Image (tube, rainbow, N blue to C red; front, side):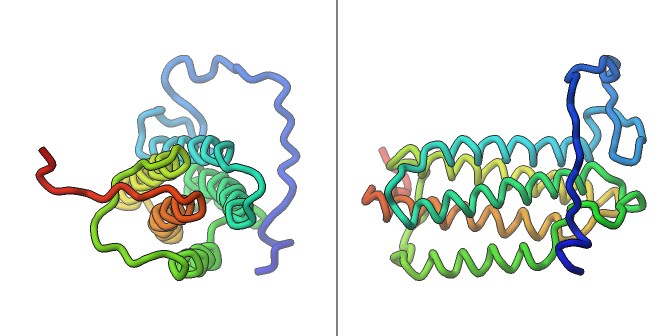
Length: 202
C-alpha cells in the first residue's frame, strides 16, 4: 500500500466548535453511529488524545541547540501525527474503515522498535528500576509513558468486546517502551542523574 493510497488530505473546516449534539451524553463515531461518551471506544481514543496532548507538552520542554534532542523532538512530533491517525481508527468501527483513511500498520511499530534500539545503544544498562524525575523533560516523558500504558489498557479492553485492528495495541505497547527509553536518553544528553529505585527507602 503506497502512501498515496493511505493518506488523503482531510479537508477539514471547523467554523463552529460547539454543536450541542453531545448535551445528552452521546457522541458520533466516524461512521455516524451515536454512542454514549463513556463507552470503551470513546475511552480508548479519548486516552490517545490525552497522550497526544502530554507529548505536545513534553516537546515544548526540549531545549534548542542539541542535535540528539532536536531529533527526538522531530520523532515525537511524528508520533503525534501517528496518534491522531490511531485515534481516527479507534473512532471508527472496523466495518466502516475506508480506503484513504489514515491507519497505523506494522511499519510504524517496526520504526519505533528501530528507534528504541538506536537510543538504547547509547545508554548504560539498567541495574535497577528508575523513578521519574531528575529533570522536567524526563518526568514529562514518564508521564507520557504512563498515559500511553492506560491507552493500551483501554485498547485491550475494547478489543475484547469489539473487532479492532491488532496494530492499535501493538503500537501503543511499543510507544510506551519508546517513551521510557527516550526518558533515559534525555537524562544522558542533559547530563542529569537518573533517580534509581531504593527499596524500603526510609
